[in-house]
Length: 377
Image 1 (cartoon, rainbow, N blue to C red):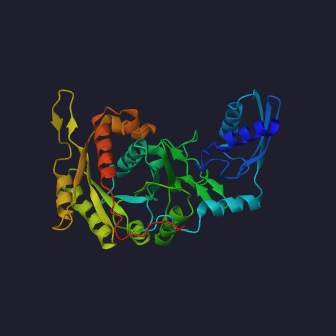
Image 2: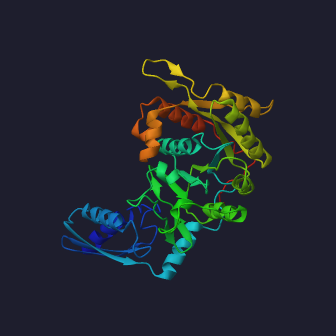
Image 3: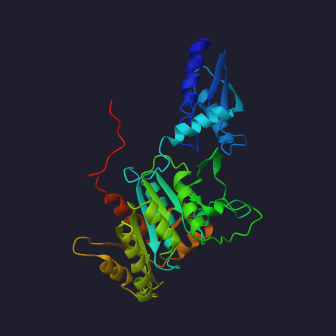
């Protein structure tokens, strides 16, 4: 009976999910010896690395899983660490045979969020869209490609007591991105040493290499959507992303102001030149609703429609997906690291962003002409 009970415990423990790899620990070969003597279960597990940040959570989940088996009233968990050979084998199994996970035949939808100029709220919209998509049950990843002006960690509350983002967990040369609000996130801000200035002053080759490593060495797992927060303008990173991900879709962000709209069109034109398609335009900082119910067009009006019209053609109609109004709650969410779609779901800006996320989900890519990752039996 002890052997039968031990097998029941093993099955229960094997189903525990590693919070970083998002897979059952049984599938990851992390479960070791399991014994049951009377009402006492003893479970051995091997963590991937020494000092694993998820160690306490995994240990507690294993303890709870074992205790859920009928007849078990006491659980002891012995925690060890994988050998280098075991860890290398795990890394290769996780990575698979493809170094670039987001190729044209991938089922992950890649969406680059661009703007012609800075200060239009592109990063704030990207962070909120990512969280809104994750809330709809999608597996979402987010790359902060704005290397010089990274802000995504702060917008998603991915900061420690020292005000710095957490570093990704490393398995050999594979990196596991931190998760916030269900969104797997990577940013250059996570790699700066604690005693370094937060400023990044890099030129083209370094920028290209950084974006390439984010796409190849970061393990996002199976994603439905990968959002990329692009730097403003049409410089090195825009060219690199166009070269590495020519199949990506592009969201163009502008404000209602004519001057901003004129510049925003350029980012869409460059995206098309690299082969990318334009998913749509989002207008940010739209009309502000005043306490008496009237509205104030602080930045003018019509910029979003103008950009959509300028980027449209007879065979490619670019839609204006929505106009996100100026909102104190949206600004406060960015300051506190609690996205408005979570912190103030009834706010008009929150509702508009959630509706745009729904529009994105409903606009699906055609699979016609693309090879699918299906093996023959």
